[in-house]
Image (cartoon, rainbow, N blue to C red; front, side):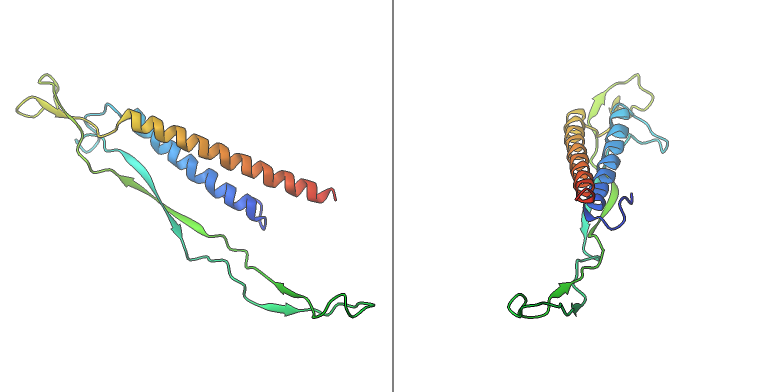
Length: 163
């Protein structure tokens, strides 16, 4: 999600919002399939989660130092010409991959289930509803925090235009 062009606060908040939205979608999918014993491949549903890794390819850098001459009536105002650091407008990014949890789910005795093995046990999904609800609360709060930061950046930009 690209918001704000050159305004760094907007970009960071937008990345956070996008990441938390993806997490919430995966959590919703996991909750919807908590009791799925057989998927399209004939196996129980496997929990999915978002693995987020900080990407170091776009580092902040100070590529050049420009000098400018300032006209001053007094020489003690500015001893040396001002040096301006220009920062490339590159945000550090995140790589997020959807990962499937390979742990086996709980085995429950259900001999009447068509997915039962010869002993009558069915391998259930490895989704734990308590873990998913906890993750959902955390993702929801992170989303709200990013939204608050985005609104604060928006208010700062708005106030700076009124100066």
